[in-house]
Length: 160
Image 1 (cartoon, rainbow, N blue to C red):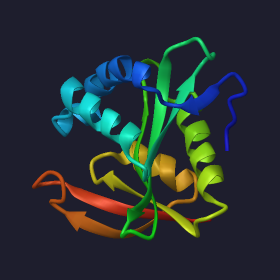
Image 2: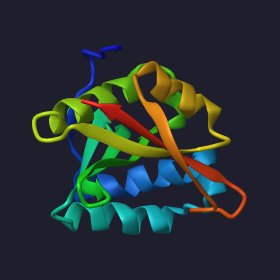
Image 3: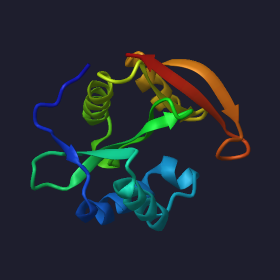
């Protein structure tokens, strides 16, 4: 696993939401799913209010803007196990170890109480499939047309 000693990982705050929603909405993956700045704002604010969700933010320093996030639902997988709803990194800092650092932090956080971590990845998102495979995730199922009619979402799992 790659480590980024220069990262600050902390909970996302309401003050972070506008800037994060703006860069999330510009990501090609989010655009493909019609994820807008408004829907990102709504979703992140809802996550901040939910007792079952938490969002981890990555910054280059405590006073710097959020450049990556991991959104987890503690019981989002069939009401029994943690589900990584979204792992996203601002486009200008892709492939710099930020996603790996966030994923490791999520795994470390849920490991004491969970046997596994689950997530979905789109059939067309081959870069994400490779990323998760490198980090020990296995495809255990697929869901056709779950979010978009012509897209298969692969269910991935990592035993912790």
